Image (tube, rainbow, N blue to C red; front, side):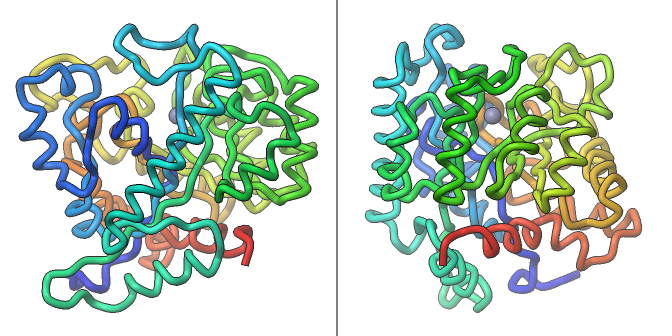
Length: 370
Ligand SMILES: [Zn+2]
């Protein structure tokens, strides 16, 4: 058994923190356990599941860095109770900018708990903090990197200068389809506006997120975009045969991503692991074992011929909670178990550690500005 201080660091490439803070008033300086207690008896567990995230759990699981989304739904896709949605690009712009301000406020009011990362220097300073054991029950600050999920809030390529200035480094063009490209449930290629945006993003070396892109858009982006490319939260379409969705990443896109030195984060969400899985009330017993996630990790390692291109993008609290994940996991603190399972399957400990955080660390160190 490795001691706490020597646990591998986890870098999680997808959490909708701002969206949860705004929609459900969740406070991530609390523990997930405390959030569940406060929300018991409300409508939140039914709508979004019981929370999987909280600062205590980040500490227990050595979750050092999180790609933290800027997210809002387009009007045509919103739920009835949704409060964060946009009818047009101006509203999307304002909603995304407000989420950046919210993350700033979180980091400013709790500098011991959360820090913003927009450069290699800021990344290294957070990682360095985690490499020294904690004193007197204090913890480590969790690093947050903004990730725009769906680019409708960028009103024109000229606006990229302003987003870069605000600290944005990671951009996904799609959630559902956007005016830039085909997305989940909205198949299709890049639009002319999408092609123009990519060429402008290239000037800054923005990191492009392929997750949620339709395959046609993803493949064209792999051909066209010269800057760094990743996929923050996608499972393998090859292992989800029969799923009636374009949400999962195809082998063709994965091969292109691997060729471009990219990394794909996989997510432990039952409906993305087992075709036809639906959340029912009551027990999680008959549900989807963690080994099905390990199979997705292994599939990407087999395609690549190494363990350098897969990581974890949990998407925890992103519309689901503890009711919708493998029963071995109770919160983000348990992601370390993925490393244990990989080692049991014959992976080298060093490869397991890359998958937990090392691959994202290498990728970010290479592509964030100094
Ligand atoms: Zn998503």
